[in-house]
Image (cartoon, rainbow, N blue to C red):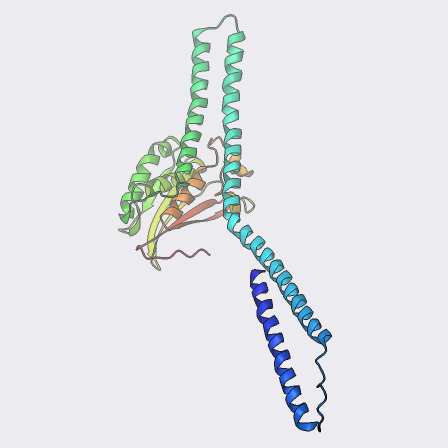
Length: 323
């Protein structure tokens, strides 16, 4: 509006100058063509001058209204785009807190109910007390696993989180991960077969085994007793690819798009097995892959098995391309 005031003052002076020039030209032509005695030359109609100035005012007003409308609309759209990531982060945090509260409520309710029932009993034996303690420890272990997983996920939200990204021997990563999962595999009589070559990827040597442990743990859990889990590595198009395959119960097509979401557990046969868990493992694995500039893909058929593939860059300058 201040700019319009300046524009109006400039145009107003230009109109006055135009009037003076026109008056001078009319007087000169009049004096050259009219025979003495010289009458007064005709004057420019003041109404025309006033109308011109009014048109300038109206034009500037319309321009200002257009600018205000466009500026308001643009500001609304830009502010919405600017605030959208913040809104998504807040919604994600609220959803995370709500889901965590819901998951914690179940073991806490179980503990409370067991203790209340135990206290109502007037006569209790040592065996009953031991059984209660064992059941309570089971629930406590579940809550500890949940809290550890939530704390690990919370680490990824730190804005200045630092990773030790270096050249990493993938064969060592695989061997360390397999060693951690091997005891559980033996209990279920699941064989872990590795076909690992000397591959070098760019990543954090301390976090990559955790990611692979999650995938191996799931593969063993959802494999049939006496089944087999296969781990293969290869380098392709500048990526080191680690695949973890099982012949277990698989994942349905409806569940596949959601398996990396926090607290998501499929409604298919995977939830019908006594595997425990809170649906945080794959979310953590995906976060680790993203932090290391990699990605995780999955292929699965129900009742035929699942294959997770980790892709890690072979150098620091590799740009990830999601398909």
